[in-house]
Structure formats: structure tokens, C-alpha cells
Length: 255
Image (tube, rainbow, N blue to C red; front, side, top):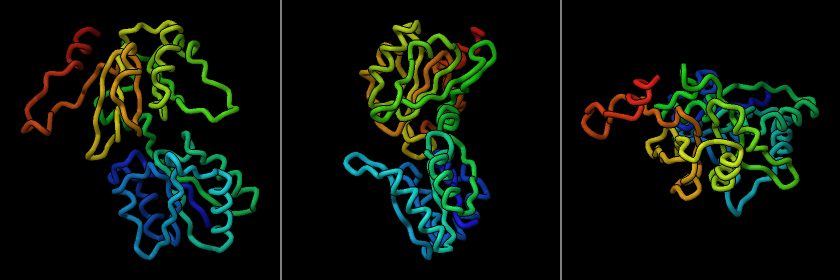
């Protein structure tokens, strides 16, 4: 294949798939996003050209230009890896890039990655589903471009189960307000996992009413629902491996 759309996972290089690592090692060019973990980027061979197209404040990268770049590199016959944080088809615009490559008549393949919508909660000890607590989970983006339809948060509040929000830090106050209007209790548990699976991971926990004022920084995955009260990380590695008494024990005892 001339181009591979590769999921880089949530950040920890140990969570990269074997196929992704193999394609990365053989790449001539790697076109990567801003959210790809430093440990994963360190696996790029020195012989490979590295192109950073990450979207950052003050430095937007047009999706049309990125797609055109992939087409041009593919036409040059190079082994191209388009390295995307998480999974290419989960809010990664991988579908748009795949369409552009197909329309250009270029061969490509998609290599799934572990999406942060599941990995981030797991890294914080939060199961997105749990018997008698949550039978389903909804993954939704908290960021919409101008002209795109808004998320109907009030209706989403009535669906039940766990809500996992990606790219929602900037709009968290408005999201919380809409969910509360939609029927979610103000004391609904919330957990925000920042820089998940990396050595800089932090977890901020609060009630839904306090989400707007909670000190949360991007990138973060926001989990809303009863399971957000869980902390199934059994050992505190920062405290000499002593067993933590966590909220999860209380939640499990109540189920």
C-alpha cells in the first residue's frame, strides 16, 4: 500500500498495535497529528521524513491541505504513514482522507488504533460499562465547526448510560448546563482524564454542576455518569504500592 492511515493509540507507545509499529518502522514519510504521544513519535526512524500537521491554537491546519499532501506523497510512490492519535475513524477525519485517496486512485489501508474514548477511562480505573450501573456508553465530540449542526445535549441526557466526550474542554460549562436542563442530576459524577496513558496523566473528578469551573486542561477525555465515580486502579504506585481505599469499593458494594 502506498498510504497507511494508522491509529497511534492514546499516547503510551506500548499501546501501539504490532502492525502500526511495523509500518512505522518501514515508513519513508510520517505525517502526524499533534495528539500523537512523544513515545510513539520516538519510534519514527531517523531515515523517515517527518511532517507535523497538528492543529494547534493559532496554527490551524486545513484538512483539505492535509488530504492533498497525502495524495501528493502517495503519487510519489513513497511509503507514507498518516499517524493519527487514537483511531483514524473516531473523530480523526480519517474518513475524509480515505475518500481523498480513493478519489485520486491511490491504494491505502486503515490500521485501527485504541481510541482514547475507551483507553482514557480505563487508564483512570473507570469502566465505561458496568453491570447494574451502566449498560451502554455514548461517545460524542464536544467541538463543532461553524456551520455544523450542534449536538442535542438535552436529548443525550435522556439516553442513559455513560457519556464520553472528546475535545470538549473548551465548551464544558455549556455542555454541563445543557445536560442538566436535559435531566441529568447536578451531582452526577464526572471524571476528566488529562494526557491519558502518559507519565503526565492526571484525573480531575467533580460533580456535573462543577464541571465548568473545574481545572481541566486539554487534551482531556471527559466521562459523565455513575461509573465516573469508580477508581479501579488497585495500587497507588506513587505511595510505595500501598492499597488505596477508593470510591470504587463503595460503588461496587452498593450494586
